[in-house]
Amino acid sequence: MSDYKDPLLQQETPKAAFQQIFKIWKPHIASLIIGIIFSLIALAFGLTLMSSAGGKIAFAAMGMMVISSVFLKILGAGRLLMRYVERLYTHNVMFKAIADLRVWFFARLSKGAAAGLGFRHSGDVLSRLVSDIETLDGLYLRLLLPFAGSILTFFVLICVIGSIHLPLAICIAVLYIIAGFICPLISAFITKKHGQTLLNSVAELRITVLDFIHGLREIRAFGAEIRVEKLLNDREKILFQKQYQQAKKIALMSFLSFVFSQIAVLLILAAALNIGFHGIGAAHIVVCLFLTITAFEVVIPLTRAGGLAGQIINAATRVVGVNKGHGYDVPKGSEEASEQTDIQLNSLGFQWNKDRPWVYRNLNLNIAQGERVAIIGPSGVGKSTLAALLLKVITPKEGSITLGGKDLAVLTEESVRKKIAWLSQNTHLFDDTIRQNLLLSYPQATEEELWQALSEAAVADVVKAMPDGLDTWLGEGGIKVSGGQGRRIALARTLLSKAPILLLDEPTTGLDADTEMEFFKILNQISSDRTIILIAHRLTGAEKLDKVWRLSNSCLISEK
Image (tube, rainbow, N blue to C red; front, side):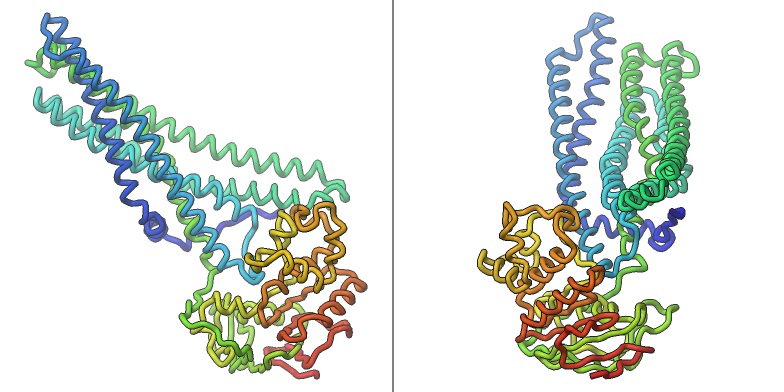
């Protein structure tokens, strides 16, 4: 329930974040540029329509028919059509770009969270995946498109009014620059820091809500509902207050931008009265007036976009920095793992960060193909870290790990995972059917193979007794089955992978003694042709093992 602090905003620069985002969007760059062109064409139709309409009114008042009604109808229809095409096209392109960004985010997230290396609050991850990524669509739709339009409008404004009266054009241009560029920049500068705190407040509220949802039973048991409700209300009020503060600042800058637009209109009206500007005809005054009003309507929304720029910048740093301080560079490798599955740890050394102590140094271990071994030790000694090293989720700082005589560094991650099936202490069952949970490890599995895996895990009879069999919905976290049944389904999923090595990291955590004994009895009866690596705090005595090592003080001590 402590306040959430996001360290990533100080670790990822906005420049690097946007470079990465545009790199992800590279396949869509041509489409994004076409969207900008459509937007400019639609804007050009609008500017031409308004200035021409003003000219028609002025010339008609003087008894002249310089501009035809047909021409105005064509402009009006063209503007309507191009605005529709532009909106449809740009939003469609942005949806695809945002989808690619979400896929990239998930891929980065999986590298940091794999092998049980969970690294931050789920509410924070959800906030990045939903709110922050959705905020980034404003980078194109609210910033780039309007900015490109404002540049075009500026040149049209200068050229048209400048051809009529240069001093007036210069004054209008100065006001346009202040309203359309300086006010949005000031708005972005003011709200940049506020945008960071706003995103943190959203993440903090989500973290709190998810945490309390997961702990509802404990909250009810201790009668803490009122206290929890008060805490949620307090954090929601903080979020609303920060949103109000940002909205107030953006509204102030929008008001100033509007004021400068009205000053521009007053200058044109003054020119109509020959005050300060002389020699402009009535028809030209009307053209300038219509064009100026239209031009400032284009840039006034930029002030609001500028106010959101700070939020967009911080959203970019949070999304791109998803693994900042948590991800680990692992050599990709180019070779396939060999058929042999002997494992060797040669003078292995590993530490999570340079400022943290070494987990191991000079660690050596040999596991022959087909052996059943156990590595035991107390919490925090590095057992799960060893599992992450074997799965090539992280890489040694010293020494090497070989699989079938080949260094893991030269092997592809996919070939390593095909050789090693992993069952962790926090095995997750997805909110889906039993069938889909099993197919996660081997999508090509036949119906017979699915039932064979369930039979080997001694849970086939349980599944057959369910009304929908393999298509039974497990619910979130496998809530519709007991802990023992869920662990056996997870074991069946692991066995289905056909991997020759089974890596079991505390597979019976949370199970009662009887269920734990049954689990190991099942394990003893199956997989006689596979290598079994059991990682545990202790042994129950039900395991059938060839060797047992105790991990202590960065050393492996043989106990069997």
